[in-house]
Length: 460
Ligand SMILES: NC(=O)c1ccc[n+]([C@@H]2O[C@H](COP(=O)([O-])OP(=O)(O)OC[C@H]3O[C@@H](n4cnc5c(N)ncnc54)[C@H](O)[C@@H]3O)[C@@H](O)[C@H]2O)c1
Image (cartoon, rainbow, N blue to C red):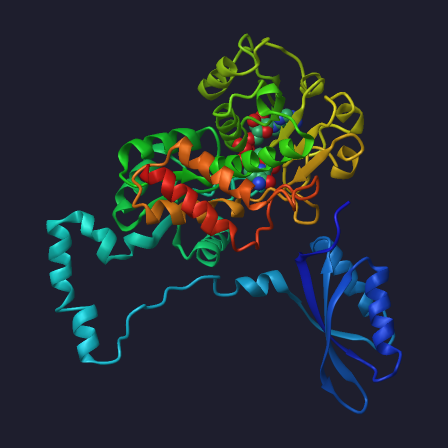
């Protein structure tokens, strides 16, 4: 199912004989090994040899090594160096700070720094709200993690989380002009994280929590929301919920169903699943059946924690028990944010007519999308190599742009729903179909539309 992609892209610098057949031999060898060539550059030419940079996509690090090994076996080929292009992108980090003001002479210096800056400090001391007008607070967000749930990789700690947080900061800037800065905390203690964020908050106009594992993420977010006068948003929860709600809105338009009549099975009741359920509930669906690793969440299930208790109390009208396969029977919608390969086409066949399947576990979804398509009317995944990619990038840049522009101090469900509606509305009726329920992440109308919707909701 997976195809070679740019996440595993290598450039092999090699020497080859200057024969007419050398290029063909190299490209066929890569093809035989299952790689996909994306560039072929002759970087040096001599009478007796040419030096070539051969760039190709692979499936995995091991596959990239297989491709290199295959090239090395060709007669006359000498592999000089293999560069992993993903690591090259990360050399020295992905973001930097630059000055917005000129610092050419004493005059510039006296205004941007001392002595001039002193008067600005005094103005802010007198009126702290001026920090939003006269400092980076106006446009800056902290991307805070403890490294406890990094992507799908688990608890890698704060230093290993930094490449993800840098990437997030780069996306904030690219899509919404927001200056975000990674804050990777060397603690996984709930109280220490809350205190640390509280202490750094004066610099920022918002806090984006990232890759903090459930259930600690729920308490950390709730307590910070109480304590801080800036919006606190856990992207793994609410960014996901916004995009899922947007995608579902459009999928339901495709199959012509009303959410109020739909039975929705949500598999995975961790960070993403809990937030998805709560945002769906704001639209009063027919029923939601939550399922986790221990089966259907119902009121009589022993050992529920406080999060699951509140989910059990507000879902599953008939108090059904059982496993995922039981929940799927008759469901109009499946939303998976759980684990790979949990069911197949046979179970989709038991769902209601015109079923919608969002299988979002990364990197491998709950069901192979090709199997899901056999019986479902609309299928979405988190993957970039299938149609309908549910990607948080559609939400978080515009959400924070809107919050910062509104000088918002809190974030509400009304703002999250406004963001979801804005994303859904970018796909107009002429373009909407089963393979296009969400806009492309590179559609540059999305972030401004989301920002405007959130700003309006924040100011209303
Ligand atoms: N936009 C996206 O595509 C997107 C966004 C967020 C999360 N995700 C994916 O969703 C998954 C969950 O993310 P999270 O942050 O909520 O994780 P989490 O660890 O907080 O929660 C995982 C949940 O899945 C459940 N689960 C695990 N194995 C299961 C099984 N075999 N059957 C049923 N339920 C099972 C657990 O009980 C738990 O409720 C990950 O794969 C993540 O990559 C995708």
